[in-house]
Length: 619
Image 1 (tube, helix red, strand yellow):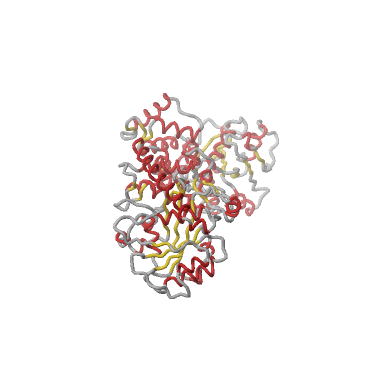
Image 2 (cartoon, one colour):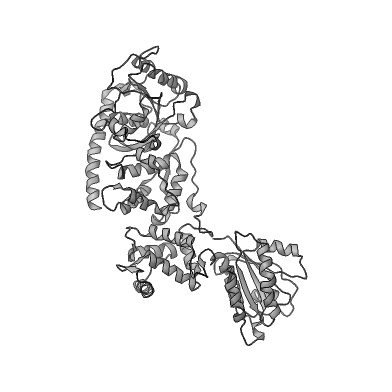
């Protein structure tokens, strides 16, 4: 909501602008009225909306046109004052003041107007008959109020309406001509409904309505009040209530009713609670809360964020097959202004036989986004209403910023859950196959991937000593001279060469010597396409000798040309090396080290699958 409100009073001389201000301040009619009252500020604690309010007077006798134009451009709301017993001052509202204000305000940001009929103590009749056609003609006129500075009639109401016109404007919400809410307002309230519909059945039941009420207004609805609300909707709308819950149409009808009855603040309270600004766009402060990520630290989702994302998955996995069909995925992202995941996502994470993103793949993609682009992750969580549904201050509460990697190395342990492996290799060495194999896809299945849907990332879970970790593989473009800091910053390096190509290993050796020989980043050599006959590499020494000289583990044989899903052992080894970069190369060569790591992984994987099946039964 706005930090303050600036109210400007304009009108013909002698209509009582200054008297209105002085009567408000002193609570009595002034005996002596100056040409113009000085600007006054009403502190936040004495205004109904708790916002500081500046009231500015205008006097033709004391101010130039230029000064008037400046004040018009600075005002948040303008009160056009006329005298109810002076027809000429009423005529000037449309012939002079409204055109003048229009000329001096930005066309894109409409300034609300209040028509103020002063001196109602001098007449028996009302001026409303004359004013109503003017109100209907100009949509920027929020309301009209008749008052008397002398009798103090409607003075505080006048300034309350002016304040309300700024803080809870009708313009963005409602079209008086059509007697209906505007498209942007409907769109915003539809998103709010879908976020609040926790079980995704298209109805807000009593539990959901109470949660919504408590979230927006800090107070639950009494059972009778809840019934009264539903009864109002039932009487006016056939499909507004279904199975004793509020449908989207019923929810929109209620807000239309609030606006038509002058209760805009109710709708604005809801909109602002769900992150909307005065233009009904999601606020940048809401979407991108502050989050400091120091160098050498990474970003991960914490337990609460994963629980929230699991609930979002459950909500949209209607057929309970632990995968999201294209329709279910579209429904999930319906609260976004655009589709955040492209077809490449299906080749970045695990999918089922139909190519649908599985539960594990879904969480993996969120983990990847958090790691690579935490600002985008915050934005996405904002669209899903994380801070509201999880009852957190902001999306930043769902993010863990890990400690500096140097501290991990010093302490010889890490609390991180996501490890990045950058995969290097010459063109045709088998890097893409290595990434896709991690997602359980053999060579036959990989051939079905369209080139335009190819992904340079693959992420999934592995188990090291019984702990579930995420391994993020990134295929680095093989342009040797243009490796960026991001290409080099990782937890482990994978150097892939093709055993059947005599010139393939040379690229790996060059990358290692130039970029990683003196770094503390562990490296692993992968002898890819090991199902093909091995050909002597045209290099000064063999890959095995090269690894021995540089204290690396021996080259690991790998193929994705298998009947079943390729072996995952190599990925467990990579994750283990990433988790324990301080472990000596002698230990890495020891078979018992790998055996301990992989046995723990197998046991945990079996346990994990059994637990997952139990969880599915309870969902």
